[in-house]
Image 1: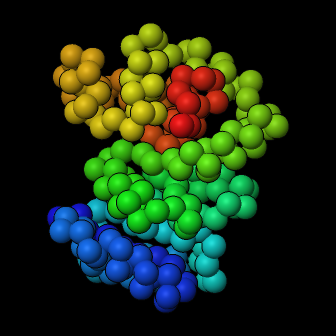
Image 2: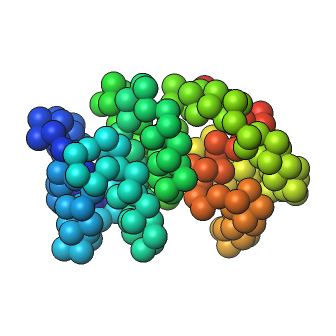
Length: 215
C-alpha cells in the first residue's frame, strides 16, 4: 500500500485528488494539509511514502516545503504545477522534488506519476520538461551542464538514459545485466558529477543534452 500526503490550500482540489487516488486499491490517502507548514506537522504524525504537493499556496509554499522535507531526508515529493509556473518550477527542482505533473493531467497519469515517485522513480510531465529546457537554454547553466555530462562514463550515460525513460533501479539492473548495488553506485556518481541531488535533476540534464527526449 502506497501512503500519500495531499498538500493543497484548496479543499475542493484536495477532495478531487482524494477521489481519484483513493479509488485505487494500492493507494491510500493517510493525511492532508493546507500548506507546507501543516505538511511538515503531518509528516511527524504519520508514515508517508510520497507527498503530492501544490506549488503555489498561501502560507508556506511548495518550494519551501519541499526544501525542508528533503533536507531531513523525508519522503519523495511529487509537485502539482500549472502551465505558467516556470520560475517557481525551477525552484522546486533545486529543492529536490522527484516529479512534476500538471493539474490538467489525466487521472491515469496522476496515478502513474504517484506510483512512480513513491517507488523511487522520477516523473516529468513532457510539457513541463519542454518549458524547463527552454528556460535552461537561455540561462548560464547550459555550458556547465554540457561539461558535467561529458564527465560521465559510457556506463553512467547508459544508466542516466535509462533513468530518463522512467526505469527503476531494478529495471535498470535487469536491462544492463548488472547488480542493483552497481546501479546505485552509478547513480550516486551521476548525481555527484552533475551536481544534483535526485533523479529529477539528473533527468533534466539528460533531456537538455539529448540523451533522452521528453516524449
